Structure formats: structure tokens, C-alpha cells
Length: 497
Ligand SMILES: Cc1cc2nc3c(=O)[nH]c(=O)nc-3n(C[C@H](O)[C@H](O)[C@H](O)COP(=O)(O)OP(=O)(O)OC[C@H]3O[C@@H](n4cnc5c(N)ncnc54)[C@H](O)[C@@H]3O)c2cc1C
Image (cartoon, rainbow, N blue to C red; front, side, top):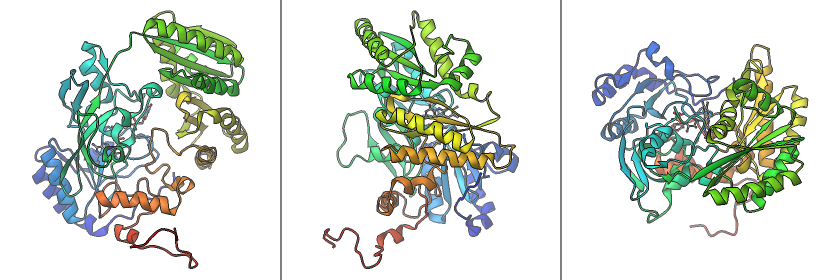
């Protein structure tokens, strides 16, 4: 896979032995990994097509150590890539040859369970599911549920603003994080938000969630927890066309119903998932929706009837409501196994992530089918239909010359289509290196420069995770200058001072 990372700084590479010695003094014992064989597991994240050995891996255990490491890197001009569990699907945790890989896995403690304030304070290396495990004995849970939740960390979730099947009703990470402790590249500790519901000043917490390790290193996270709903019922609804299914999603939401989840799978994905888990998915439909309703029993029963009526109006050919908790979990088992199941259809696949306005679903699904024919590659669709977050899986065979490049081009075309119909380049996987070069599709020069100014306010030397998110690496000083092309001043009506 073609990949452009910032050129390694030769002067840093030449100082490697000294840097390792200095970092070992800050994190003694086994906290510094520098042998090639031992660093190998860190050479990539969830996007295994990209690989790069780091300069050194450091595993701090305390915030004080993180402060000292970052201050050291700041003072000596060394780049830093923060890492949680390394499951990013956009290459966000990909190391740099001249950079410290700051692995936060040892920050794995639950610090405070506060039922009275309905929140939990955790270290960033705690897994997403670990938070629910810590509170489920009292009937609580942490709502955002990425499929990777047994492995991914809350620090990584904050980095990517991760989502999951239940984010339609309960929100993404950004809607469930109340506060963070963040160490800046200077070694300074800042606290943003907290157990209280609002904070004074600018909403910097919103900027930090989804910042992909570019603004600081998160060392503590306060998250909201929710009481588990009384009941949850899932419905499988099959359709003769994907367009009918897309129409049904738009009509359910348009009717004012916010299900806990609405997921869609197309024919290829349904067949693959059914062969994998045997839960009774209908095989004679082109598209399948899994709609989950939760809350008080009476509300669920009422909404189920409304969904049934809407589905019938959208030409649904099958409808099956889960009759027991076991059956509901069975419906989800197929969806959750869909990605590995699709892996059986093809030696390789590329998982894309883009978001569109819901009402564009029928159009986008039909255009994707045309693109599939044009590129000569199959595409299976398994996605969060309720929030318009697409995950097309482009099937290819990396052993065939040119197929991977073809798959990448197809993927880029899909993301451009998302932007064209009023959507965005990412839904939950972040930009990282994977979508970095497509950023100008969505943002113009001025937008990108403004975003970089925010980055500069946190990290004036651009040492934190450079080469990710922004298509062009610019020094902060450059952003102070204004380019006047052909004598035309940008925003001529704005006062200058
Ligand atoms: C099988 C599979 C299924 C997945 N399903 C989903 C899904 O349903 N929904 C979804 O949203 N994602 C999904 N993902 C993607 C991935 O799991 C998420 O993006 C997750 O949040 C990454 O967490 P992580 O701990 O692995 O972070 P990493 O991959 O290690 O890092 C992710 C980003 O966060 C930054 N970061 C990590 N820790 C910190 C920190 N302490 N401070 C500052 N920055 C930090 C990194 O620099 C990087 O930019 C899936 C991945 C896989 C492999």
C-alpha cells in the first residue's frame, strides 16, 4: 500500500542510543522496549497493510512519567505517537521511524465508580468493555459499543471518537465522555470537564475527543454510565432491494422513532454471516435490517407495531421479532460476526468508513453497485444504517497484481461519493493515514489551516502524531502567513489587525 509518512529526522535517528538511555531513566525496569524483535508487535495497528518500526516503545505507568517523557521529547525535538490497544482501522497508531511509541496499556485501572453521579473515572488503557464489567453488578453499563470492545481502550475510543451499533440512540464517545486529564507535549497537565455536566470556558473537551493523538496524551477519562433498559427486543426485517431497506430506515427515523440500533446487511454479508453463525437469517432477501428497540416493555411493544407498519409500507418480505433474550443475542451474533464472516468470501477485504445523510442511503447503495461493476470488485455492506455510517467491505485478492490499488481507488471513490451527497469522510474510524490525503475533498485550504492552528495551539512544534489527519505537514509559523493568490485577498470584507 502506498504510504507517505514524514521523512525521518536523521539527527534524531543518530541520537537513538542516548534517547533510549534517557527514557529508561524516566521509566525504569521493563518500561522501555528497544530491541527490534520485541518492538515488532507494535509495527502496525488494525491496518496491517501499513507497517513501520518505531524508534523505541515506552510503556509509562504514571501520569508523572508521561509528563517527563513528553517534556523530554519536546525539549529534544523527538516525535511521539500515542497508542492504546492498536486496533485503529485508519492507521492512527502507526509508529514513526524517528518517534517514540507511547503505549498506554499499563494505565489499566478503574479509579472511581460513582453511581450517585452516574459516572466512572478510568485510566485510558482500560478496555471499553472493562468499564461495563466494573458497573454491571448494579445494572449499569457504558453505552458506546465498538465491535472491538473486548480489546480497544477508552483512550483509543477518545482518540477516534469511536461508535458502535447502539450509538444511534445513546451517542458516540463524544456524547459519553464527561472529562479528561490530558498531558500536553510540554509536560503540562490540563483537566478538561469532569463529573459536572458543563464546564466554564471554551468546550475544549469536544476538540480533544476525536483528535487522534494530535493534541495531547489522555491519562484519565471520566465517562457517563447508564442504567440498563428494562427490555430490549430485536427485529429482523428482510427486503427485496437495498433501496427499500434504506427507505425503511429513513421512514422509521422520520416517524420520530429512535431505535437503540438499526443495522443493515446486504445479500453477500447476510449469506456470509449466516454460514458463520447459523442464526436463521433469511437468505432470499437482498437486504436485512436489524432494528432494536429498548426501554419500558409497553413502549417497546408499541414501537414494534409502528416499525412493523413502516416495514410493510417499504415492501418488507420477512419480519421476525426476537421472542427471547437468547434469540435477540443470536440476531446480534450474526451481525457481530459479519466482518470475519466476509473474510471467508475473499482472501482480502478493505473496510471503508464514511457517513452520509440517512435519506441518501438508497442513492448511495445504488451508486456503489455501479462502482463495483466499474472497478470489477465485489463489495459487501454491513453498516450502522440508523446513523448513516457506511462500512463497505471491498473484496479483493492482494496476490493478484494491481488488485490492492484497484480496491484503494474504489474505496476513495466511495468516500468522495459520501462527501458529494452531503456526508463526511469518516463515521467512527478516524482519518489517520488512511483518509488523510482525501481531506481536501471535504475541507478547503482555509478550513485545513484553521484546524492546524488549533493543533499548533496545543503542540507548536508538531511533535504529536505528525503525518496523521493533515494531508500536508506545515510548521506552525507558516500558518501565521497569509497567501494572497492573483492579488485576491481571502475574506476581503473582514477587518485586519
Ligand atoms: C475487529 C475490529 C472491529 C472494530 N469495530 C469498531 C466499531 O464498531 N466502531 C469503532 O468506532 N471502531 C471500531 N474499530 C476500530 C478501533 O477499535 C477503534 O478506533 C478504537 O477506538 C481504537 O482503540 P485502541 O485502544 O485500539 O486505540 P489505538 O488504535 O491504539 O489508537 C487509536 C488513536 O487514538 C490515539 N490514542 C490512543 N490512546 C491515546 C491516549 N491515551 N491519548 C491520546 N491519544 C491516544 C492514537 O494515537 C490513535 O490516533 C474496530 C477495529 C477492529 C480491529
